[in-house]
Image: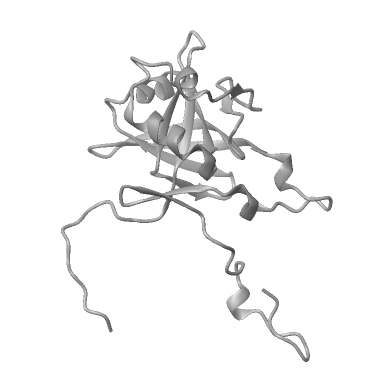
Length: 196
C-alpha cells in the first residue's frame, strides 16, 4: 500500500462540477456565480444542492427569488466560468463581460445560459446555515439538454458535452467513458465479454 501524507481537514471532495449558477433580482436583472459545491441529493422528487457564501451577491438573489439554474458548462467556456467566480455581480454585468447569452428555462423566471449543454432549473426548498457557506436545497423543476447531444433514437450522449470539472483549485475536462453503472457485475454474453 502506498504511503500517505495526512493533511488537516479541508474541502477536497473532488472532482466537482464547475457550474455556472444563474439567478436574478426582483427587478429581473440576472447574475451568474460559479459554484463547484453542487450535487444531486434526492431522486424522488429530483433535488440538487448548492453551497454559497452569505457575503456573495448571488446568495441574496437566490434567497429573494427562491430559484436558480445550474448551467453545466463545456471546456470551451472555462475562462468565462472562472471569471464569473472571481468578480462580483454587484460591480460587473457578467453576461456582458463574458458574452454569454441568457435563455428562458422552463419552470423558473431566471434565465439559463444558452451556451451551456445542460441547464437544470431549481426551486429553493430549504436553506441550511453551515458556517462559511449556506447550503441551498432545491427541487429540480426542469432539465434542458442541447439537442446536439441527443441521437436519432433519443439516447443522451453526455460524453460529447466536454463538461468542465473543478478539483483542488484547477479546471479539467470530464474524461473518457470508462463503463456504466453496474457494468462491473454484468454477466457475460455467451461466447463473449461483458458488454461495456
